[in-house]
Length: 345
Image 1: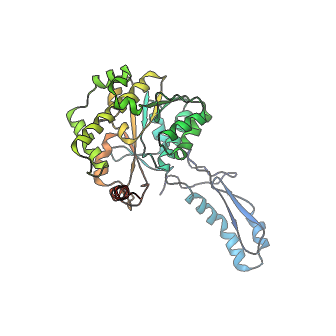
Image 2: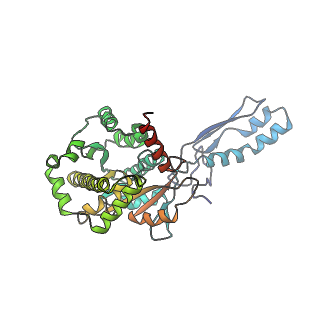
Image 3: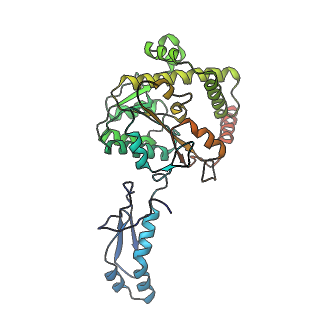
């Protein structure tokens, strides 16, 4: 039985946990002007008066069954992406988002991974940020989606900066609204293209941090393998080596930004940057308590992580499986895009 199943109705509110999802639906029956309304998943309305306005016996029967039907419908509206079970890699334990927020609130550095174009991932990030705020934590928010040199001064400038980088701003709105409405400090952590292309343009502290924490051979091999997989085997060895270097530099920039701002700190970045083995966490070791959360897409058509995904999940402290953004194989889409580029479509 789902943990979010509604168990009681109290004065317009269904209370089963702190992760209630606002839901409001209206049901109307032909032949009657009365309406029963559900607010926050709970029944509000007078069923008796509704039944009395019905002219037919079947209508009255439906009216008497309506409270049960409405309650079940409202509970069914609980969004699965909000109540997603949190996995603890290496164990059979499952955590609620509330329980995860309890643990994250005790960390100095929290890294929330993402699939960049997953709206579900951004809603989950927003919920976890709300959870930290509810526990008295006011973290500095460091975002991969904004460059270090941009420093946008307000919400509009922040969104312009993200659009300039090609980020899907609309998907980040839930997260941005939580941070902006509560007055959290938001800073960019990424590097510019020029800084990545020209080594001498890199900030000195970023270069020093990257040099002090080189990737171990096993970590470098895993990163190279993941980059090759992400490019569907179509990137040659030289390209993969270059991408490994760029990823390591971005990780160093994100880590240096996190170390330079007031704590606690929350990083919003792609799953690859939040991995403990070759991502930002390895650069923060010894500087405070670090917890990393991966938001991993299930394979299309599956309700659980595959065996391979479960093994990879060990790269994070916690993992939340999310629905795939696309129904088709990403490599099929990648090859189709290449074909269109070649044919000038």
